[in-house]
Length: 470
Image (tube, rainbow, N blue to C red; front, side, top):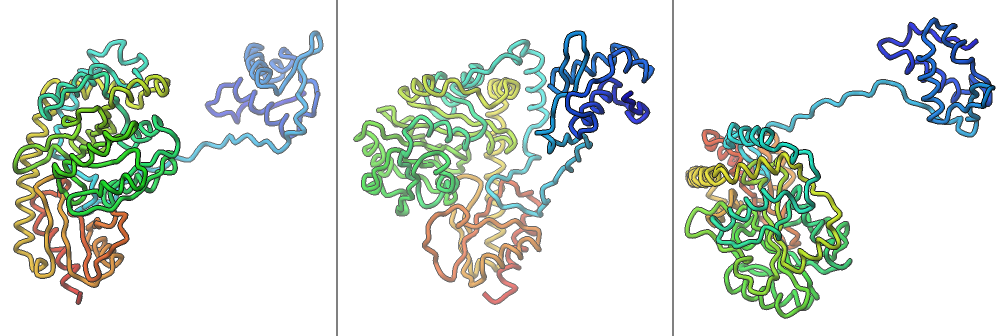
């Protein structure tokens, strides 16, 4: 009679323990192929357990194919010899520990912000309201292009603050700009030629083949991409960031905009992808008018994200498509599910509709303006400026620091780590092979900088370059 030590089951239900023991014995060959098992009543009596408990174990083995039954004959082990290498891992899985990011004294990377500046209590209130008022809507399938409430809120916000008149039906919600790029390029033929500037969205060039597009790097001048190069390279789509050409912070001038429109309008399927990243933060003059608002022939695809204006972990971005691409998306990609949960979308809609988002933007614009003035003043006092110069254009949350030095990038980076500074280099965002000997350019992102740390940050940077002959 087959017998198992039920005392070894721990807290596991008896029928589960019995099922696992019989399964493992069949796999190992301890119970041979086609061997008859004891009847349910006999197995129950031998282990002093209920017949139903054995029945549950046998039923599970039958459903998974480890046993088969013959009418009026009983239960038999399936021939598993051809699967003798199968091993069922029953060990308890290991736990992974939470990995905390290195806590630098200052992290200059572009996607870092100071979380203390975000109105967490207000955001929490919006999340609670989403839960309380959402009702059944929170549990229904999210429309492929996002919930109407959020698309309406974004449309109204853009009209009030960016002078953009946008039909909410043209707005598509997605989990991050990179994801929306993937969806956008699925609308075009495989091998579509996409142009980018030498500096800016380096990721697009590095992953273009995965998106089934040909990314071509087009050189340019101080004003931006060389539009004549678009024709020469048979470009179909061009990516630009007119309001803030990261990481330089320069604006795309009107002459270049008009050249791009002229190029786009001369072809049947030519589009301009406008990334309006960081456009909310401008510290002098008027806000830069989006190319979307100047487009008279519906050729601009507009992209923006809430990751920089709110918090990086909020992976919510949006894309505004031309009418013909809206129809194409619905017909060819409408089967995709929206990648942002309804809960987050309802909370964000409330955050925008309540005015909290605009108040936050205005507060952060003032904060960054003061932050910018403070750090520029600190650099002006620093001996580092004997060998360095700053390039900044009153936009975004960063500027360039060009240092005359023969120090290698690796040395500068490692010295930064030693001083708890995570240094970001211009070439990290550039595809240009041109290098200026004797110089290195850093990207100084001050969005994550704590105000009272500014003097020490500048001091540590200065030590890297001034305490060694350069």
